Amino acid sequence: MLTDEVLRHPTKVLTEAQRQAYFEDGFVLVEGAVSSDWLERLRDASDAMIARSRAVTENDDTFILEEGHSAETPRLKRVTSPVSHHETFWAFASESPIADAVADVVGPNVKFYHSKLNYKWAGGGQRFAWHQDIQAWPHTNYSPVTVGVYLEDCDMEQGPLRTVRGSHKGELYDLYDENGAWVVKIADHDLNWLQDDMIAHMTGPAGTMFLLNCRTIHGSTTNKSTRGRPLLLNVFSAADAFPYMAQPLPSPYDGAIVRGEPARWAHHDPRPCQIPPDWSNGYVGPWAHQNKDQTTRM
Image (cartoon, rainbow, N blue to C red):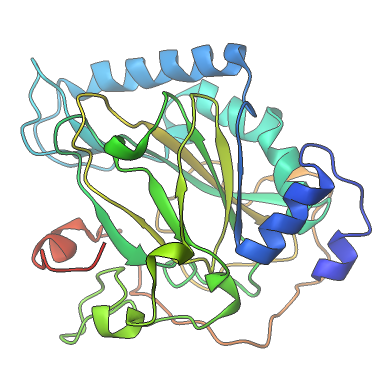
């Protein structure tokens, strides 16, 4: 669905000004978007997953571990596809107002794509280099949107997600390095135009939500605080968007329609998109590649 068509539908969660900000900036930040009841349920589910991770000693299909992880002191980078591992996460993705917020920016018919829970653990939770998302999971159009929800307060010391205003309207960049490795990182020389005043920081109290366009440049810095930064991420698209490649983070809910109806026609955007490696034999995350280069501009 084209933007003009989306705008014909009244908003359900966002204000009209917030919707316009999303289309103009490539993101919108909304404090107080998630109720205390949902936050309590999500935190309980997160605690349950952390407890499960105590028995894990190396990365697997569910957990990506932070350096220093142990049964006594768990440290996680990510729970992969949390909707696959705890019913609360799927209930939130499908029943809470976040799906209505997505409908405000992609149209009334909304499809679920995938989810992840990134922790950025206290005292050194890792950075993530500047990148765009859609090259990792290209679709027939650019409607995919990531909904991020902070489960705890997040300030500048905790390595919040950072975005580049208006970058969704510009170029899609090469996320392979000079050796052909898939690193999900934009090369420094491609960002020599980036100025500090173009950057917005996604900070806010627990329950803050942001919507991020799939073309928007974003990243994060190291968590140097004594507090973790658990960030729940759910990716949705318009129902008329279809992925070109195998799902990198599969779940039982791939392609589930969470609002409206399935599409009978695919919408194809004429702009090209880079294609990632073939994930059909398993997904390989980018952290190991990114960590080799500590000079990347953040």
